[in-house]
Image (cartoon, rainbow, N blue to C red):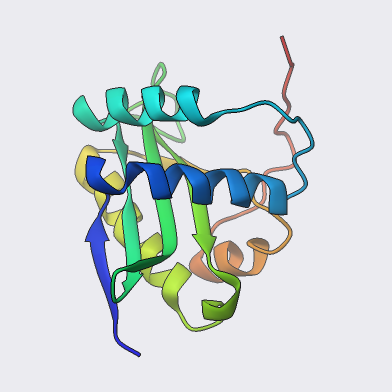
Length: 150
């Protein structure tokens, strides 16, 4: 098995979106709305302006792993003087390819993109399955994360 890594392009967006939806459901999402159009609009816009990047893992022509990083800015603070933050998302590996280092390689690549963008920190809301990967990579749990749904 030879895994190849390539950047996401518009050519793979439909497969990428379907894998993102599978990932959300695997993580326990229960809202049964069709996100396809919203995701397509988001990725198309943010890929074009450089505020979303993704690496894909391929086995032949088949996409078997995904990653994503959105770049946002907020006022600088002591923990992130640039104010540039990477929001990690879309980390997914097809079940039969898990535990082979694919997610770690994808994570490494999007983190390098975040460094090049000038991000001072990277944040993720980790699934139970991903916590070990992120902890081993050096991510630290922040128990202060809160969310208010509108």
